[in-house]
View 1 (tube, one colour):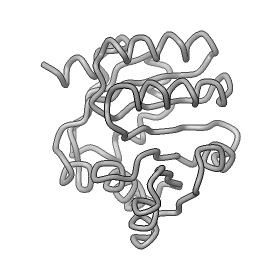
View 2 (cartoon, helix red, strand yellow):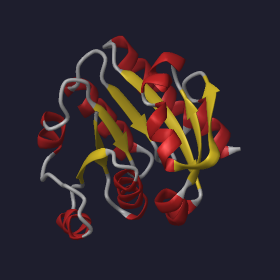
View 3 (cartoon, helix red, strand yellow):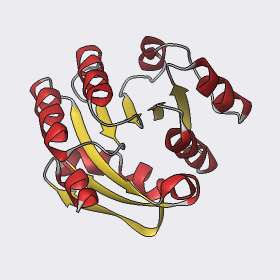
Length: 173
C-alpha cells in the first residue's frame, strides 16, 4: 500500500523519511517548490500537485497530513474528502484542534472515508527516528493502517485512544 504524505516541512519530511526507512512505499506533496525539492534531494518521491498524489496511490488510498493546524488542515481535509472514495483513509498527523478533528471525521464518515487524528510527540527527531503517537478514530480503520504507526513510533510508542478527536485531545492535554 502506497502512503501519500502531504506537507513536506520539518515534520512531514521526517515522517516520509522514517516510512521509507521502514520500506514503505511513499509519495510526497507540498505546495512549496522548495519543500518538494528538499524532499526529492533526500530520495523522497514527490509529485507537484495534490491530484497527482491522489492518482498515484492505487486502489485504496491512504493520505497522511502533516500541515499546520487550522484552516489549512480543514480545507485540505475537505478537498481530499471530495476527491477520495469510500474505503480510503486520511490520517491527520498535525496538531489540529480535536474539535476540528471531530468535524473532519464526520465529513469523511458521511462519504465512507476513514479519518484518524494522530497526536504526534517527539518533534522533528521523533518524526525521523521514532515518535510517540496517540490515534483516535474508528478502530477498524486504525487496524487497517496500524503498521504505519508501528513504523513511525518508538518501541511501544503508539496508542489507539478511541473515538474520533481523542488522539488530538490527548496530545493537547
